[in-house]
Image (tube, rainbow, N blue to C red; front, side, top):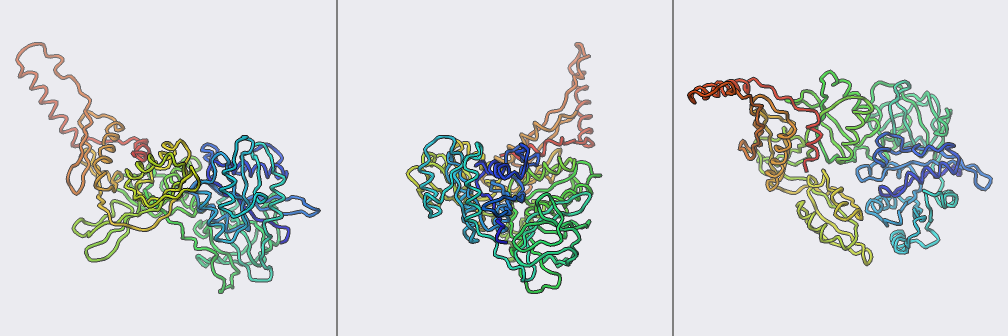
Length: 591
């Protein structure tokens, strides 16, 4: 155990974390080719340039005549995947706090740092991109103030150029403590990750804190009390099979089952007869904030979609799902996500990894309904809204959002956040030109494009973190959309009364552009409490039935036009509206 070091890299998005991980693997000869995307190997990760899933790599490195085992647990940087960072920090004894000198300390960096400190983890500050040849004395001052450290504690590197990597590895070995587990105590392990292999079963990655895990041992998952027998056990290095794995190390086992719900990421593993050991963390402490329904375009794909969602749930415990039914779209699933980016990633993975074409409803947040009989009800689906006469009032979720930026952008940020129904709380100057702003904002106002718009008005020099703080009474209404006088329940959404008309107008206009014309007029209507607030009409294709009339009395033309009008009215009664697939993806970005 003295020769094991478990560590992760925590950083804000685009600070060079994946590049540093690659340089460490390359320097230690863990990889011998130039495959830079060994960790970010998912197609979506390569396209978007972000880390989505944490990855675990085992490194062997010789230092002072000893062979050390370095377990690197990679982490994402985007705020929507902060749960992945927390898992990694819990599984490690130390972390590299990576900071881009051209961007200074970002809000997400501070959030991850605070969590690591709270869990008593060793922090090594690392300043990246020193090859840019810019003066970063202010960054050093801010790092020293945040970590309460000295100049000699800060490591200066360039992950892109490979500068300072050898020194960094030595510091990891010298400063990060070895695991303090006890092999004589009962087994206690933590599930870091898992994924489904079509040929082998579920591959479960874990970190052992106490005890020993051996082949043929019977273990128990504390979340569901499921007991299984270990018959395939291995360390991460080259996926070697092992008969035993001791406390302090990271390994994997194969679980052959068709029931994908047995494994929960973040679960605690103990011996089958253990009744005293408690869970390391609560696996249900991730609060889903965005909810929408997913349906297969072809109803024949329903079972395949169910299997795909279960496999994704196995690999990503932070999103939830339940069976759902819509009169418009049939059978599907109501899913909860940590944010819009989280939803987009899951949607793309369903399409690319499982080749299932889907449609989705408009995203909503979870509202608290206070009924007149004093009962409370939480809903995230507009279809579940009780009768108006039964509702006393509605509360919506609020978040505390912290924005770290430069002081010259204060005016634009204040204007933008207030327009989002934000409540300004305070401002703190971190230095002469860097400032931290705090707002209370309804979560429904930021789920769409808040972060990108904020980046735009501050020219990229801003970062945010947010935290759910509770519910607050608000004037929320449900907007229903009717197309050709038929309710399309998938388009129903909640909105604040002051913004309901604007959102409904945008939605109806967009529907008008996206829905193809028919031989009859198609009305698109938005309702609030059975009152029409917006109407748009899709004009029909028109055939010139009077083209063959040359001269004569006007009554001849009117007779033909009236006959055409009657025919179109009949056609409207039996006419079927086909909604194109891309209409649902376009409506996600209505903001």
